[in-house]
Image 1 (tube, rainbow, N blue to C red):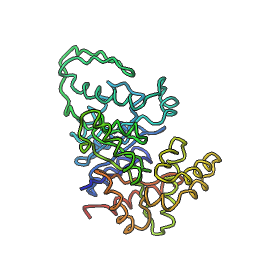
Image 2: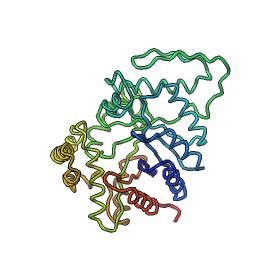
Image 3: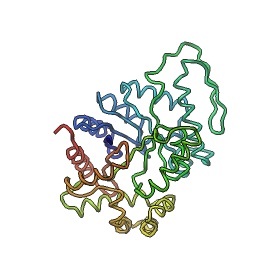
Image 4: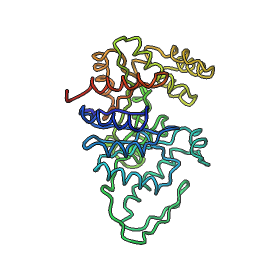
Length: 339
């Protein structure tokens, strides 16, 4: 059975905590927070964990660049302790432009190889109480010898899920991760023809069982009594995600090359309306659940069958803060297991 969560990527820290508390009260299995130019996944998940007792908490994603392996390992160690073992560490690199421009990475090539080096190193650092950790790799160097006794962490096997869009980055999940965080624009076609085969390829390379790699989906969810309003809100979020040129090949593989070209053309012209108008009904039906509550409930039941865990997510692009809050509340109420 697919477990269900909610993703919070809009609003401040207080609002993030309030949403997580409400999700716990509604019986959701997990709450997730990500990072962006003005948002810390680590700090927000710490606040989420401290404010709750039962619900799983996760970073979706925290940037795997910009922090040393030791800092990232210790952040996760303390988040897991704070939450009582409820943490899932979701990691991603972002685009090469983000790696360089946002995080000052001097070698942005090989992001998948970078992740494949980092994740086993994190797991070794969670066992630093067992002895020194020495590592010399392409991207990371560690030479750490404890000078005093180090207490074992709450868990030495904190689940690590990695984000991936292109086949090579998806393959990382098969090689070294516990799960794949799927992009909101993933479709049945892309999952069947690209993502699953990439996981299987990575797992085979590492001698692992591909079936042990969990799939986490992010479902764009817009609830409004006026179906045209809800669909437009969802379309805006889809347009936001496919606007970067890097997503062209991904959308082409899903059969949406024409729509994506139109979205990207409108984006370059700074035409937000044109971006939204370019999203077809077929794209919407593959990537979102939008409409009145009953219709959304039925649509989510279909889309979440793709995944082991489905995180519902309110659109925010072109929406004001009050509408995002209203929609998030509607999601929690519509999918509550306690009311």
